[in-house]
Image (tube, rainbow over all chains, first blue to last red; front, side, top):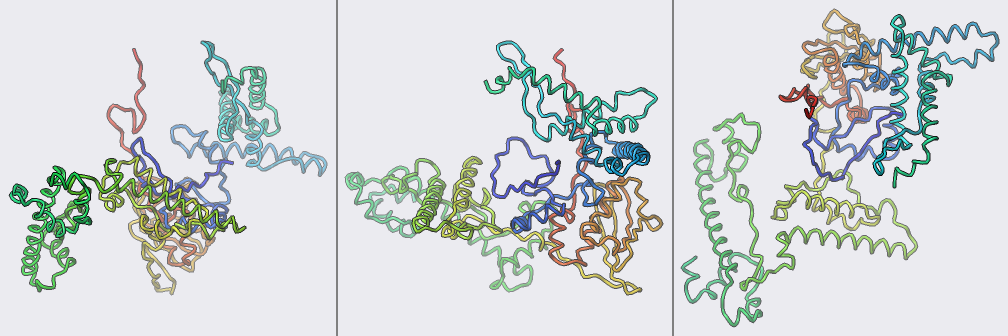
Length: 223
Length: 383
């Protein structure tokens, strides 16, 4: 979903208009450390080409650990303020703990096996589901035509919609009473969004409704 | 030279001179050009060129003599045989006599044959009447544009071959492509040296684009020889550094110590032992909980998880300086470098592609004056 695509600029010429700020020379390519991506390289025979290309060092949040999840690391970074990742990660972990508790309680109070099977107790899966449910398909962009600014619905990329979903969830969790802590509120928001209800999903639906209402302006995108 | 040209015999005297300079045109050219026959004049351009050529020739001769004498002197200083004093000996002697700490190798003192020091020049591009040989002379860069034309001719050739194949009812296979794996097109400076012309960035880009067009042809296998003239082989990245052999400690375990593992301002020495139990010792009396941050612990274990050997090596690291992630990064690099001695070459290549064997030279970027930080500008208000 958010995996970095391996870009191979082998013989691609570039015209540089701004100075090159990276410490790595331009011929260096991004590391490919995930097992499945490396396998894909070998099956496509691209690893032979890479053998002659120097590679950038893997960054310090890259890992092949089974506990690593791209979405979660992205979400942590969005929660993070002023580079305090330790705190951001801590908050998210606490929130996962809350989710686990709530879901386990539901699981244990469930009467039948069928009901139990329906309950998702994995907080990671709940986060994924919550993001999936709060992803918008369109957004409104102000476009000026003839002196009047129209709110024009435009389709957005997957990356952008993921970002908006995560941003909305975090914003919703930040709007809380002083007595309630962020992890608690985030857990509630995630659980709500995962079951397709709550403020974030409503915000998405509102946006879609707005887009639907402004569909008459859609042609301003290209005319 | 000027005295020669001032005389009446100038045309006659030119011919042996030109022959001596190995310029590839004959006296017939002169006779064929009616203007030259009628006026018996040498164009101003040719005159100026001949002057310049003669000057350059004399200069090079003087330089060569100077170089030869200098070489003999140097040999005598070094107590070597002046007759058999090679370029390698010269370089060694210069390095010994004039030690230099300058970073750029080009800036250090050197003594080389004048042909290497002074750039080669173009031979005359026009005949005695001033008529250029090359149809693209007035582009100013005839060699470059001729090269582009040659590449296009090769592309046409490849397309012709492809057409023939299709006519015979066979589609070009993957093997009919031009395989440039392990080669890169010549850099701008190298190309300029071959062309004896300076080219702009845009023109170099055009060269690359045209070459890539050639390489993309489905049946360009016959153009390989041509293409390789303008490509240079790349070094196999995995064979750049040597891999040390593991040593044996008193318990009969294999071990490897990597010194000077650097990342940001952290510095570490990392020893890995095999066979082990996966024990990680940091600064003698800490285990992996030395790092409070889970991300840093993940970093330390990254190389071992990557090669699926978690719990088979013991790691001992001494680390100082820097912050948390810097220290973890330094240890990660040390472990990865040490593990190379225990795994086969395929796995080493995988580790390289994963970016584990690259030294991370990134540092904190400095704050700039007039800016809020490294890149961020102060808020700007018009009034």
